[in-house]
Structures are given as C-alpha cells and as structure tokens.
Amino acid sequence: QVQLVESGGGLVQAGGSLSLSCAARGSIFSINTMGWYRQAPGQERELVATTTGRGPTNYADSVKGRFTISRDNAKNMVYLQMNSLKPEDTAVYYCNADVQRVVTGVWFRYWGQGTQVTVSS
Image (cartoon, rainbow, N blue to C red; front, side, top):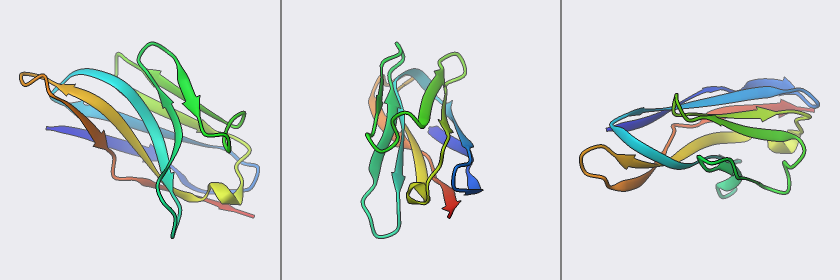
C-alpha cells in the first residue's frame, strides 16, 4: 500500500506565503513525477506544478514566479512554497506521485487527501 500524506495549508492574507509538504509512504520502489494540483469550489482540478526526479519542473502560468516546487528524493517528499498569494489561489491542494511499487513493479498514480488553502482579500 502507498499513501501520500500532506501537511501545511491554512488561512493567509493576500500577499502572504504558505508552504505545503507531501510525503509518500509505503511499498515504494521508485517515484517518477511528483506534483501539486488544486481544485476550487465548482471548478475542475487543475495542475499547479510538477517535477521529475531529475529536476525539470512545470508550472501553471497562473503561479509562475510566485510558487516553487521542490523535492527530496531520499525522503520521497515534495514541497510547494507559495508566495504572493492571491484570493484566486484559494482551493484544496492535492499532491500526487507516479509510484512504482515494490514486488509487483507496477506503476500507479497516487493522490493525497487534499489540504485547504484559503487566501483572504
């Protein structure tokens, strides 16, 4: 079994900063892409940022220059530093990871349970 456990998030005023963390735990042989998505009320889930194990990152245009994704491969963790937050960043943030499981070698995309980020104006 594999679980993604998120932490961080909360309430912040516009212009402020928050950090999110996500730890992948369980029967993990290898992890490829890890990333963050978000879903605001009444909207579809959208990509925020992703990173591969070798460094390349990808950001949504709406967060470029404000958010930074980073990763600790030794700890199977991914982070999201969010600066200059705006009310439109308010959403539930989900981490995900493409994981190859031990023994079976099967790849599967796992998701965290989500953490709320609320930015007040």
